Length: 147
Image (cartoon, rainbow, N blue to C red; front, side):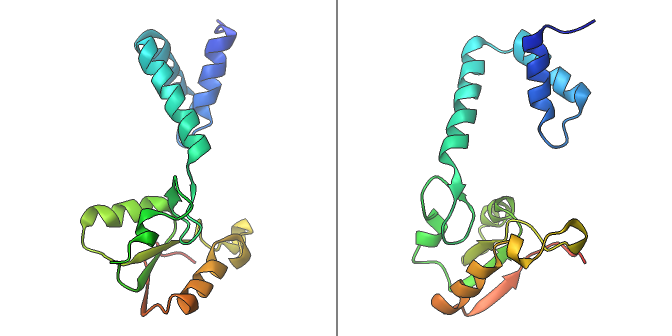
């Protein structure tokens, strides 16, 4: 049996997310149509559009923010240390510990010659200029081990 076009389009949309296979996408679509209240569906779609339109990378460190410069980079009480991480997700993990009071730098990926990702494809140039410009005292590499 074929699904109605609108339902199939919704399933296809959920399938675009990483880690969401066809069965999970189907479950999410059916839940959305059959179980969610209309106001929750509307709120979800509004939040999705708002996040897509308003979230950007901090012009200094590269983490996700709604402002040009994130709240961490504008916080003058932060230590003059930079922790280098792969993505904004790691920034949030370290911030939740309340144990680190330095700055961050998000690379936006890792160098991977096998995948054709070189230094020019990640946020290294900005890191190097920050080290000089901000007179960074220490650099912490918080990256997963890889080739």
